[in-house]
Image 1 (tube, rainbow, N blue to C red):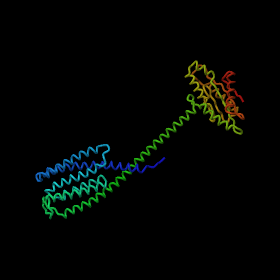
Image 2: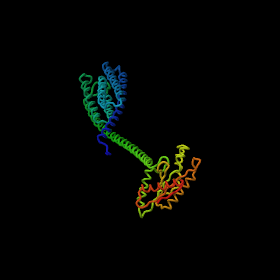
Image 3: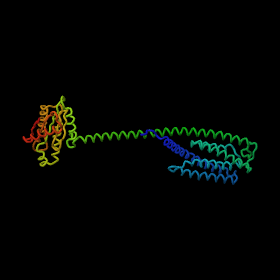
Image 4: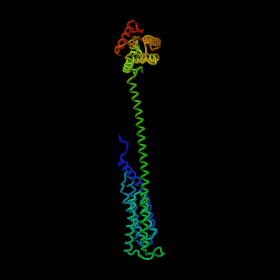
Length: 402
């Protein structure tokens, strides 16, 4: 049985957890996307009188597209397993629509640093997905989009290259200023990629720890269940062992277990070991009790006799129900005198015990002891002969057959 975990399975689970965290980050980014959509609308309507009509219309169209995309992403992310590729079109839409808005504002305010800083913001937001490749893609897309709108603006003569003045609405843009922005943006992209990589390492470690803890908890839970199952099985085995050895009516040993005790006793009975005695007893006139009082009373008589026997026998004796109303006692380290004494005591205890009948319940006893060469069958045969003699001589007697 393998106790290790397949590395491929662990990597797949870690990847799935990372994707789940990326999807959560995508939701945060979508909230920012919605916020910026309303910001674009607010700015556009706030300076509508200062904007050319086509610029205002371009900003409104871009804002509406951003709004529709944000709504679509919202519903996509609500799915049980949203697609992992949604982050790539997201950064593309963000950068492209941002570029359209910057270009539209740039036709009258030039490409001021305040507008350019929005690229930094969107690149920084891409690090939320802790994906270095995604952050790099967002950065390269930002540089490409910025260069395109610069050339487009210069080509349409919306701006001219030259020395920048202090006027806020000048159409002049310094080439050095554009180059410096691109240099700083490139440096920021490198920093953002590094941050995204650090984020990913931290997230991977945290998720790996979470994965290991979850696996440890599952193993502990499985072990607890296994221990509980083993305990239940042990209890069931004990119950089954008890059921296989105990007579259900009297709670004494059954015939199978008594056979085992006799075999063990006979092994230890060979000289020079101690002797073994056998006492076989039978309830007198038991059929008449059943016929007169019913089987339920008959069962209680058997139980009463069993209880008397259990209380009267010695500690090293084994007692069992031999069958029907018949009982047997296997006595270890017992000679004939001790066996007869025990049988007489059992007979007296049963005779003077109260039962649910109008007459006393008595038992007849047959006693024998081990002799060389005895087997369980020969020992039982002599005890049965002794019991038969007790019955023939008037019952409620103890008879010994050597």
